[in-house]
Length: 259
Image (cartoon, helix red, strand yellow):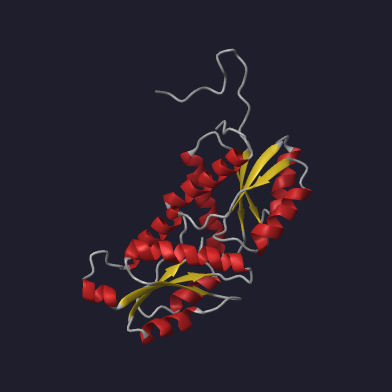
C-alpha cells in the first residue's frame, strides 16, 4: 500500500512535521563530521518527509545557533532538538536548552540517547565485529570483561546514565562491564583494565561508547589489552534511536507526529 499523500481527502495540505535537529558535539577529527552526516542520511531514509537538520555545539559548522536561525529565516516554526549525546550532562542540561531558548522558532529538547536498549544492541554488534565471541566457553567467560569507554563528565547524572548502560551491556554479554572515562571522570580506561586484571579478568575488551571517531575514541582503543570496538557510528539502531527520542519529545508535549 502506498504511503498517504500530504494532501488530505478534503484537499487541505497536512501540516509539515516539526523539524528534527540533531545536535552533535563537534570534533576536530574530520571523520566525526562525515559519520554524523551519514547517520542523518540514515534517519532521512527511515522516515521520508521528515525535515532533518544538523547543528553543532562547538568545533564544527553548522553551529546549532546558526541552524536554528536558518530554519527561522526559511519559515520553519517548530523544531525538536535531539542531542547526539549518550548521557545527561552540562551540554544536555545547559548548553542546548540555552541555545534553544534564544531561537525565534518554537523548540523542544529531547532526552539524550542513553541509556537505551538500542544503544546496548549497537555496542554488542560493534564488539562482535571486533572479535567478541558470543559462543565463548564458561571458562573464557570467567576470565573476560568489558570496559565501557565514555567521554566523561563532572555531572553525576552522566555517570549514572553510563553506569546504567554498562549494566544493560553486562546483562547482554554475561560478563562484568565497567565504565571508564577519557577525561574529567574516573576511572580511566587503563585503571579499569588493571583493576579487572587484578580480579582475574585478563581478556578485557574496550567497548567504544562514542558516537563517532575522534581523539578520545582513539586513545581509549589504544589502551585495550585485547580487542576494541569501533564507535557507535552509523549503525541503523542509532538512526532508530534518534527518531525514537524525537517521537517521545512530541508525545511528552502532547503533539502527534505528522511525518
